[in-house]
Amino acid sequence: MSLIQPVATSRSSGSQVRVRKVAAIVFADVAGYSRLMQTDEDDTHRRLMQLKAQLIEPQVGANHGRVVKHMGDGFLAVFDAPQDAANFSVNLQNLVAEASRSESPGQRINFRMGVHVADIIFEDDDVFGDGVNLAARLQNYAEPGGIIISEAVAKEIQHDDAIELADLGHLPLRNIAHPVRAFSLRSAAAGNPPLGEVLPGSEGPPSIVVLPFRDQSRKSGEEYFAEGIVDDIVHALSGLKELFVIARGSTLGYRDRAFDVRQIGRDLGVRYVLHGSVQRTPNAIRIRIELCNAESGEIVYSDRYDGELTDLFALQRQIANRVVMILAPQVRERERLRAMRKNPQNMTAYDLVLQALGPLFAMDYDSFSMAHGLLKRAIAHDTHYGPAYSYASYWHLLRVGQGWSNDPAREAEEAARMAETAIRLDENDALALAIYGHVHSYLKKDYETAVELQERALEVGPSCAMAWTLSSVTRGFLGHGPIAVTRAERGLQLSPAGPHVVYHEHILGQAHYVNGDYQAAVQWGRRAYRHNERLMSNLRCFIASLVAAGQMDEARQVAQRLMQYDPGMHLTDFAKRTPLRGALRDSFVAQLRAAGIPD
Image 1 (spheres, rainbow, N blue to C red):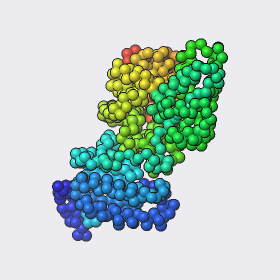
Image 2: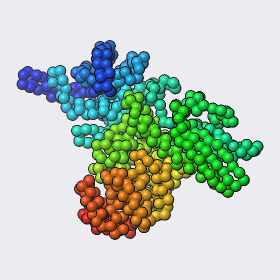
Image 3: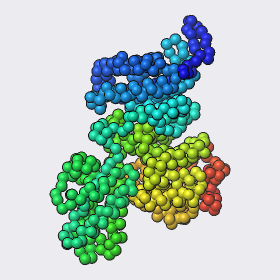
């Protein structure tokens, strides 16, 4: 049934007929249009005109719609009903993808599409209204080849088995007063691209294989020691959600023979190869390791470990922990830089999450909003990629902490929903468990559930830096100072660089504050402040630590900076919402007051 029904008609000056109708609007834009035109203007224009004549306009007509206007790098179309608009959008994206299959990835024309249904104004050959603007804003969140629809459209088509919807939550749209709930839309038959048909440069998360370590002592029957070290390293690396670790059984054929890491990369489909050797005497041991890039063959990192052979199993765990502490930051930073160099058209969900981490922790509002868009695009790209949901949950937590949320209760619901989705996808996702625990402690003040979730996170992900740091936060809220310090130190050890580091430093400072070591709290608070002075929770803790340490002049200076960034800060409101409890909360508030923060 058609949704387009006249609700008002008038005649404007110049005899133009103006009609208000409910219609489904599709706004489409060519991804990377400027780059395509700069590369070959004539060819890009020719191919766009070809798509217009052969695909766009025929598909619009076949689905009971009409093109309102072409805009050089895109088009605007309206349809009788949301189902027609959805069918058109899915069909067109599939047809465009098929038509460009033979072209190089960098030259393909891909549309981003936004779909909304609203009461809009038709005036001769154009349309106007907030609904049109909303469709245009939605398409900004779509990935190349992707479709984002509003909740109004989703309600009309949700029972169509031929399509799949992924809930993106409420998106903040430019020049739109309130966030809009949105969904990504794709054909249920599309599925994921078959193995071997992924676009060049669009690989997923990095993969690593740990080869059997060579036992240099060559004593028969003692190979178990080298194998035990490898097992512990594999187990520890497996706790990193951002790494895909090849099972050890796949590597047995490489024991005691010469190998080429590039060939191993091709054979096993991995990006990194870790190998090493073990040499021991009755009382001592030496371990050598090398991390190699399997694509280029270069040595990314090498290290040597010398120690005493006392408790064999404790030593294996110690070596594994050290390897992970060294390798995880190396891999993270290399992968982040790798994603930053990618052509946007080749982005995967993994790349989009990496792209989001910088702006997520930049702590200025525009960058923070951009991080949310990147995370939503990641979810739209792959509805089964857990870290995208985890960091989207964390985005809502930071939004409350920065004082940017007008509705913390709804923010808490969104944070919980995103974390729950990540856990539903993988019940052993340490990052999701840790963040969900933080939702409970920071926003819900349910410390018992938070501790349970975060202890589980540490069990399944002993190498997850955020699990250690967020566990420290909860323990700090409970006043468990020594445990909070130990766990914050571990989190910082596992992530000593990159965009996260300011948060790890801040939480270590907060842990020292809870533990009563105010000089150490000042040291780490100042370090985080130098990395980013806009992290509100660090500013508050840094001020309280300075006051507690008797450094009043600096405390007042930092308090003035806090009030510049958060002029609405009042201690009465803060005391009600802070997860700090009892005497710890009271002294923290008193110290902020002493520095000049108003009641």
